Image: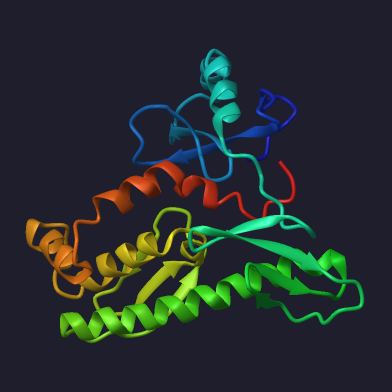
Length: 242
């Protein structure tokens, strides 16, 4: 948001090593002010009705400073991808082994990722490797669940959405968050079963949930709990700065 010289200054908040400026969003459908802290990146967001006055809204936010900064302090710490560090992978940990003069290509050796090349491009190369691994596994698992369900599957893709771990279109295209590769295998499989079950029921009816359990062979309640408790931390993997 652009603030002119005659307008109030946008405040910033700090907590837990994070500093975030307030983001102001105006939405025509909003009926009241709403303040939130995004657990995925720490964004402090004030949502306002289209015609709401800014100055009293900022004063209201200032009165919530204690809550905002306490909430920032509870967020996961940024988890940089650096030589000698670790990254979560399918419920375990992989150590990053960087070898000066080694190949730029990332390869897995037991419980480690080994690579050389420029140190400054290490993190992007590891992230690309993770995305490729995620797509390969999610594609195979989605096709397998589709056969089990007796449904057609369109294109399978991965991205980095902020709101969903997966989505299924009416045409049968399924898209996932690549960050599912960082979670335990059971969590990823439960997410795949959820999306494939939408090929049978494009809703969240009792019949849909029964289809998920039938495809998975169990109630995915434990996996849903895991994502609620730990899912936000996956968005901090690869962050170099607070």
